Amino acid sequence: MGHVATVDEADRSIPPVKTKPPGGKKTGMARMLDTIERVGNMVPHPAVIFVGLIVLAILLSHVLYLMGTSVTYEMFNPETHALEQTTATAQSLLTADGIRFLFADVVQNFMSFNAVGVIIVAMLGVGVAEEAGLISALIRKLVTVAPAKALTYILVFVGILSSVAADAGYLVLIPLAASAFVSVGRHPLTGLAASFAGVAAVFSVNILVKPLDGMLTEITNDAIHLIDPSTSIGLASNLWFSIASVVVLTLVVSLITDKIIEPRLGTYKGAEAHKAGGELSADESRGLRYAGLALLGTLALFALLAIPSGAPLRNPETGALIGDSPFMNGLIVFVTLLFLATGLAYGIGAKTIKGTTDVTSAMEKAVAGLGGLIFLLFIISQFLAVFSYSNMATLAAVKVGDLLESLGLPGLVLLVGFVFVVAVLDLIMTGAIPKWAIFAPVFVPLLMRLGIEPEAVLAAYRVGDSPMNSISPLNAYFALIVTFAAKYQKDAGIGTVVALMMPYVIALMIVWPLLLAGWHLLGLPWGLG
Image 1 (cartoon, one colour):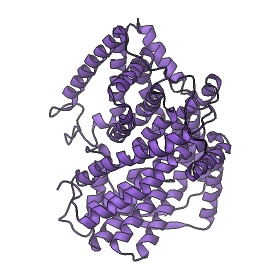
Image 2 (tube, rainbow, N blue to C red):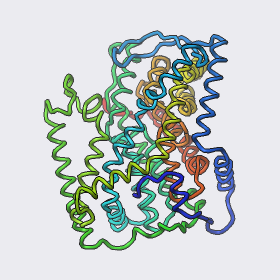
Image 3 (tube, helix red, strand yellow):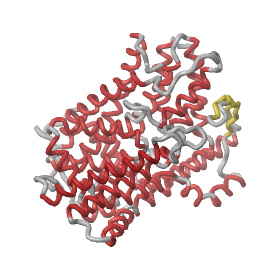
Image 4 (cartoon, one colour):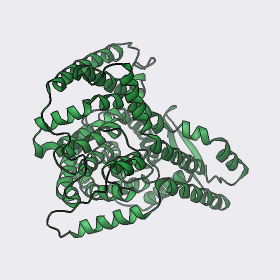
């Protein structure tokens, strides 16, 4: 993976890329996606868009405030496990308090935007691995050992599994996938789209139990206890459905990639094409062996720090490793150190790193390449803070939830309808835990009374909460994906990424709810316990 280029840097270094799909004649789907891309890329720079959204949110917040808009609802406090009645009122940003917030909290809004720190910390390790040549060597090794037809499936599957490691999929796998596709003569945006779909659009399921499962299960159990204090579900209560979803959606995303995305993009003729090809040299092979030893050593060290009872990276009060623990809270540090150790070992073995100056230079280069992205994230952080202060997302979620509850639909219809409500709201309220804290007290008891297991309700929430992540500009990493795309296609913008991801969203919002409904109708077990 090259360093994370800014859009401006990409403009200077990469010539325009023209692609033409084979056969010349475009399908109706291809023409529609081209229109989405063209229209989307006509909009101003993303920073300008978010400035406009900030102004709109400020004005709309004042209108709702003058109308006295408010909602009263019950939601769970995950810390106290208590159901709390809460009233959310539209807050204006044009009142004295709102103006003080706009003026005094700018720096704090940016500093508390976790995506910024995560990206910078991750790139310190990834930058060393990239500059040493480890990433390129790994890609070439992957291409050598993996069958060409299986490359898409492998990258999508790994992308889905990467949710165990929080943000590592966005920061590492997506650019790596683009480079891997270039190395075999395929369009890099195809690899980018496939891996982004795996990482973001199928985020909520896995074949393993992951940190998010702990919080979702905890909130679900509190909702169950409203009507049945004797019943609870476990961390693995959706495991069988999640594993089936991973298998089915790996196939769906891979087929969409090969049958729709790649034919539309056509042949890539950029400067990077095939640059990663070729057999590894003796130095490179030795570097990979050294990197493998460094990987084993780093894993062994963290195993000693995390696995034994009372280990320092476990929760000091509960002893838990998964969930709220120093290990999971600092997982990005683990990923960074992993890349730093393996990159350094590779550089020594391959003779591409000759001293500490090379290491620090690689880190500086990686962080310097984030300049344009950090500026954009600053603007996005201000919008999210303004939107959160106004309470508009909460007002929308509660109003829509109340409407769906009042319709009196049959259980299965309500379950599937719930999926689509969550999906739509995910465009403006991307956090999985805050939405579930609002929805669970309403829909878990409601659907339980209609004979639907709480595990099914949680599974439905997982289905609705994922696909829109890949097209929502409020996804903290959406801007990063646009930046990655601009490295390979000079004129890539928001429209490019949305057009790339739209076929996945459509397919997932058809196949996944059908899988959910079929699972329920067949009475299959949702998970363990």
